[in-house]
Structures are given as structure tokens and as C-alpha cells.
Amino acid sequence: MDIFEGIEKRRSVRVYRNTPIEEEKKKQIDEFINSVNQESGQHFQVFYDEPTAFTGMFAYGRLINVKNYIVVVGKKGKGQEEICGYYGEKIVIFLQTLGINTCWAGISYKKSNVKAIIQKGKKLYLLIAMGYGKHLGNKRKSKAFEEVTNLKDWKKPIPDWFKRGIEYSLLAPTAINQQKFCFKLINDSTVELKKGVGFYTKTDIGIVKYHFEVGALPHKVNVIIK
Picture 1: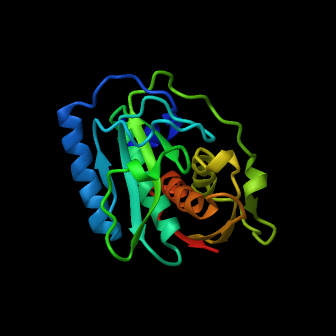
Picture 2: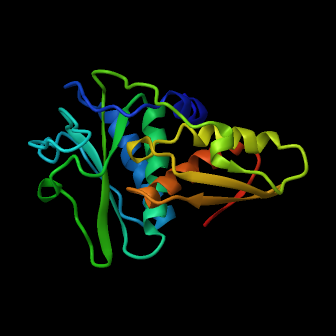
Picture 3: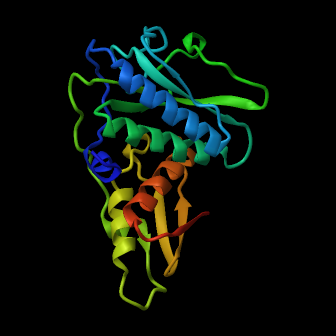
């Protein structure tokens, strides 16, 4: 499975089976997260066979039988949530290519039980639950192309790479499926991505940016977040 199929097939999974993640896949995951940390300057951390973080919680989107998770630890400061969303989703889609299910978690865990190292100048933003789902998730309702684009000043035919980028952006997970974003086509290599106001929209916009860039491939595009 490549990243395109990974994006197309990925669903948020909230209930997990007891099936452990294989050692060979753990090695691949560890290596991928290390490469993401080196590229991003963040400190994502992975934990296997550790069930306590998601126990005893009854908040929105409660996750059940989670025994493996990734801790999204990033730098403090402006723009860092977007960066964490971008690279976190890069990990999520990599996991999907391995056949491993995931769910972004903002409140459905007990922070004091999270086994993470938080260095000075960094903070815990979110968790990503992972494992083999008991159910493979449901397809979400999605906005239409026209609802997430602003093309009023664009006079030329809409390029295919932009259409594909929007198609993949609409597959991006966002908090409570709010999809509060809008793309504006600036020129043949640049788009603006405007975020709305709502829960976790700063993280969401990083996730959406990653999806757009993948959808636009092999076209190289500069996504400017507003």
C-alpha cells in the first residue's frame, strides 16, 4: 500500500483488538518516527503494550482497548501545532500503509498516565492511538469542493493538481469533522490555506496541508498557511 491508498483507506478507529503489533513493524515505526523527529525538530514518542493512558476515560470520542500510542510532543510557540499536525499525519498515513489503524486523540486519555518525556521548551499536544481495529471505522460526511475553495479571482482553467489536492484534503481527519479550512489558488505553484476558528483547528490545518501536498503530487506546490 502506498501513501495515496493509505489516505484513501484510512479511517479513525476507536475500538481495538488485542492483536499485538509485530516486531518487524515496530522496527519500521521506530525508524520512521526517528526520521520525522530529525526532519521536524519535534519529539514524537511511541509506546507499545502500554494500556494505562486510555483507561477510565468517558470524554468525547472515548477510545477502547488502546495499548499502543504515539505522543505528539513538539516545541512551544507559534505555528508549532500546525507542524505537529503535519508530521503527525505523515506518521498516521505511514502506519496505514503498514495496515495499522489510528485515531487522533485530544481529550480521550489521562495525561498523568502518559509515559512521555517532555523536555524543556516542549509540550504534549495530542496523542495518536494505534493498533489493529475491531472495526475499521466509518466514512465521514464531507464538504463539497466549492465549500473549501475560493476561486473568485482565478481566471484560467482549474489545474488537475489543485483538484486532486482538494480531493485528498477532504479526506483529512479534523476535530469533530469540522473541516474548517479554505484553499485559495494563487498561481501555478502556490496556494493559500486559511484556517477557521474551532477546536484544534491549528493542528487540523497541518493535517490538511499534508493531505493537499500528497494529493497534488507529482506537482510541487507551496502551501502558505494564513
